[in-house]
Image (cartoon, rainbow, N blue to C red):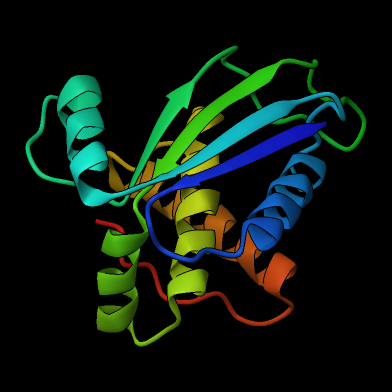
Length: 157
């Protein structure tokens, strides 16, 4: 298992905690132990560039997920195959604003975004009521399990 965290954001972020979360998610979603995940923390200008390049939208966003091998979650009896899960780009400055609005810490928001982004890498989406309920329910359960307490409320639209 390889979880790579690179912080190019200019903000202090607990990379070790993000790495622990990545390991937790890989295990909890029954992914192969040799699954790779890359997390890049970027400043608002870099995030805006990625947002335009990947989604065709202006302005910085909170998280962008770029899947690689189109892996899907496994099950307790059938682990997913090994591969590169993909890349997450997270903007801690946007996360800090959302955390303030949500009444929780910036780290909690970054962990929420990393969980959300990882689910996107695995094919989950929230473009209708049913898929939103499934994705956000799983997101809350995973993050609560990792934190050992209730997950912060979603600030993700």
